[in-house]
Image (cartoon, rainbow, N blue to C red; front, side, top):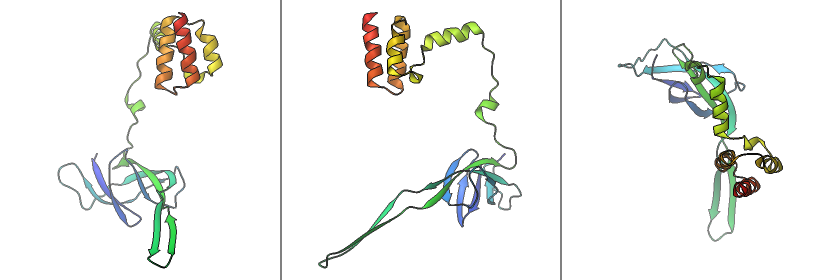
Length: 178
């Protein structure tokens, strides 16, 4: 498997690697469609191959608009001022494979190990309750039944997540009561 390739899309050349996402000029393909751009060079395994027989497979992720470019015209002493703008139409693509085989995702590459139910329960208690899915009144009600460790875990989770003022105040008040 090669480490990089140079492809041609829309009259421009791009150096790509597997798994890389890049913005190119708008393509006619729909979102989710796969395409095989013209391959100009394959490299990374010692000497580059200038006449590659391998293919590069790319998937269209989304169609986007580029950053707005502001254009202003001005002529001195006449009062003439004109402003206009432009946003390029772009397509975000992801390189799925170089040379045939599709790249394995992280989840597929790592075999899952079976956890014991007791360990799952310990991790759930250590992590504390899921406060991100709860509303502030639900947090206020439930915090009365939680022990100090659960409240501290929930407070830490809220601070690292949404950091809602009402939820933080309710958890801090429950922590002072304990």
